[in-house]
Image (cartoon, rainbow, N blue to C red):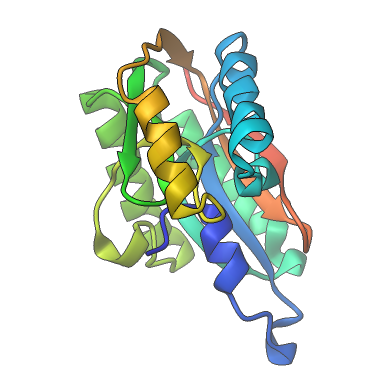
Length: 200
């Protein structure tokens, strides 16, 4: 089961008739110092559990799953997302402890937040109406915000060892979300392409 944008990129067929399009997704990237603290945990999973797939993208909360868009029309995408972000207010979210999607994915959990849910719902609606994008959620499974630390290449035996280590481990931070980010796939990894400021 696909649980992250990296999974999506790995199985998406870059067919020859699609070469004129690139892949993008929309996310929240947590600010420092939380970003670095969590990024160290991704490196820990690589070093101790041989899981490095999550290193193929910046640490993030996915707001809209990957979609294809023509680079020649990037200016329209950017202008639209700038307009959307300007209509949204900054807010806070709390990251608390760890959870999993057995038997492959371990992540930092994001506590339920009305502000975060509303942002994702409004972005989903905006992308449908303004950008003709209809795949905001993975297989319509709904919004389940989290920060992935290890996933696709975390083998089952290693998953259970890692989960035994992390299931009672503590992590807590509250961060202010002041931006949403458009990421672009360069053929190998996801990179930050453009950030859009929310209003204060």
